[in-house]
Length: 235
Length: 75
Image 1: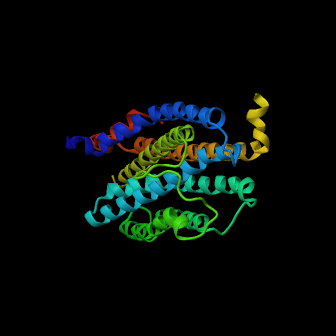
Image 2 (image 1 turned 30 degrees about the vertical axis):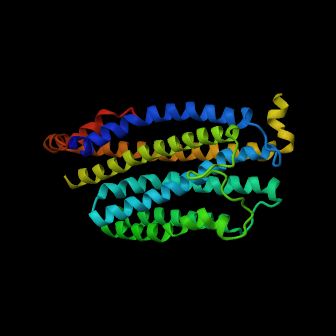
Image 3 (image 1 turned 180 degrees about the horizontal axis):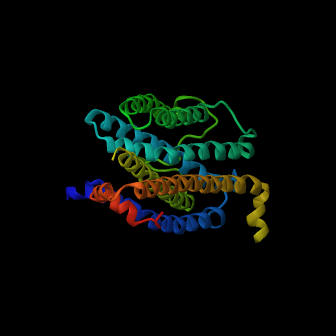
């Protein structure tokens, strides 16, 4: 079983997987877009502008999920000195940042017809903007320090500081009076969203998750080859 | 019907621009990551080509190097 964790085995799998993930992503995205833009009903209050939810909400969920995962992997990697966890974290970050930006921009576009403004310094929006800064700091740190122990230390500290912001984002709508409505989807209790809107939302979330997996695999392969390039220099 | 899909009671401009921005971001990220991958791979192949036969044989003894060289056409 452990032979599957050898770098050559990992690369063998991660270099073959992207084309299948890309195909699956295109199929799921096509279904999701049809559902989100054509088949799902309009909202009684927000009319068709509610369709922006199908890109805004999955993007926000995935950017938060990726940052939490990066923090977890960095922390475990730092404590147990597992370099591969840092490589995985580093490869996850670009898609996390892009999803965070997508959530902010689509939220801003949604804000104009709904609240009458493109931007407000509301608790949820501001905390999401702070998360973008943490993503940028994380990625810039890798650029500055490259793959060495200092990079592992600095990026772990950034993720630990940044993770404090994640529960603030999640509960900001409950803790403060914000323009955002409280969560419509709850895992532990009954969701207030109608099933006809929940399905497209879940399909789009699956499509976005597949896209982040695709980017992760490609980035991870690039990082592995980068390490091997340095190995050839030392020969 | 087609008009309804595009105009969406006057909300079309907001809805379509949000979706287009998302898709454009995806394409841009995909292209950037793909370029980085191809660049690193080309660098690896060039470096490998400059090794003498003894060093090349040693490098090839590492399974991952062989794996990288064997799938030059993949993503």
